[in-house]
Image 1 (tube, rainbow, N blue to C red):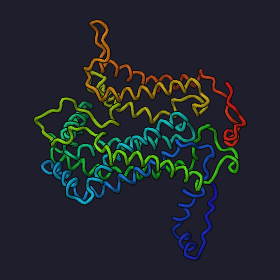
Image 2: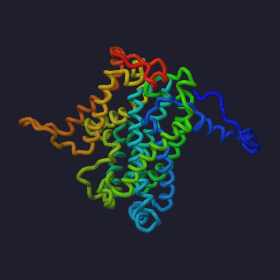
Image 3: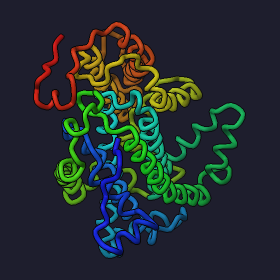
Image 4: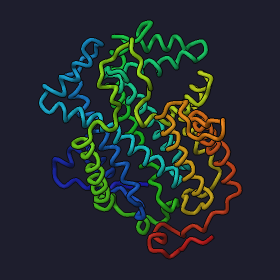
Length: 422
């Protein structure tokens, strides 16, 4: 997609370095001359926003790790020490804690944009799979980090999640014991989670590099969902066109980020985590962070422990095979009227699962006579639709749906020369 390099070293040192380590050429070809479709909208800025979020999390995490003590007797106190005694420690911690939520907000927008515009379809299957792998690593990293403050929700959240692995036949108990570092949660568990929480962001960074590499091989998708036919007419250089748009998008996103950091830093967390972990006192309602609630709802929707674990991981695993479930030859939902409607239904279902995950399972949603419709019942219906959407609707819609007429080219879609027709 990027084609032949246009980088031209301007002086002797640049030519010398380029002949030995063409890192400047790589940066130029990646972030300056790289051709992007000229019809990209602001939903495409979230790739750059995610890169910024990752950098923020790594930098603040490294500094916080200098003051954190991964011992059950001292972990909670070390977090309080960071907040009260370390210079700007409160700021670093609030940026890091809220940064996790900002990271997930951006990744969910990025993924739903990919689903809407068909960015998972050929030839971008590997690009999509790498993105889902990044998402899975993010979830693991967030879970490990949630345990580190060693508050009530940290301890009991770790207890619930690690116990889930014991449901796996034959090897489950061994996995749980390995995660604990013994026969119960304690110092070895905290040390393991701290090590993994520190390591995984660098693994994410490595997969992000592969993700960007795959993107530059296949080229970016676009709102019209059609490939570049004429590079001169359909594309523009990444800099300054996409760069300016990305910087503006990042600035708006940073304003929202700053609002939470400076004005409402604890709103996205759980108040129970400001109480030191107590193995003898179980919180009335154990919940993970908000960005994991849909999968927690799926887990609780199944009465069988193993079945719940399988469905929870299956809800993520199904995303890996998505490119082969969609049988439509048209990518963008702009030209798929049926798919567009079901996309928004799926979006509402995901929000509903998140709401169910945040509520107690026996909470009554609706009462019809003597019959009570609880959160668990609603979660089961939404879980069924979640899998039905991917396993049934995706293959069937591609076969029965009559898409609208596609534009002749990206340039034509920008100039409005090919209006979509039913």
